[in-house]
Length: 125
Image (tube, rainbow, N blue to C red; front, side):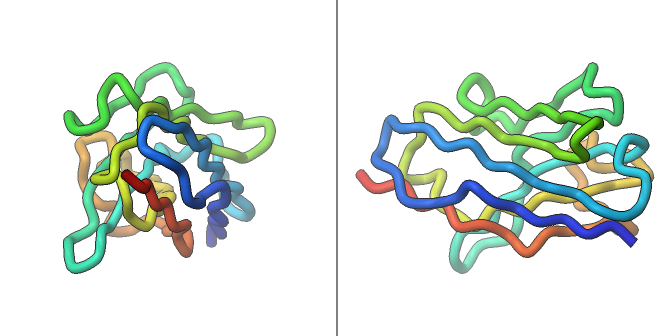
C-alpha cells in the first residue's frame, strides 16, 4: 500500500507559478512510474505529466508542455510538478498518482495504482 499526500496548491494570478509536491510512504516508491492528473469542476480527470521510475524520461499533455515540469527525488520519496505561466484554464484539483505497471507513461489513469487526495490550484485572471 502506497500513501500519497499532495501539497503546494493555492491561489495564484495568471502568469504566476506554483510548485506541487507529492510525498509517498509505503511500497517501493523508486520502482513506480509517477504522474500528475487534474480535474476541473464538472469535467473528467485528465493526464498532466508522468515520469519514469528513474526520472530519465518525462511525458506531458500538450496543453501544458513547455510550462510545467515534472521531477522526482527517489531519496526523498517525492515527486514534484513545477507549474509556470499559469492560466485560468489550469484551475483544477491536481492529483498525484503512482503506477507500478507504467501505464501512466501512456497518459492512462493507473488501474492498479495509487492516488493522493488532491490539492486545489486556482488561477485568477
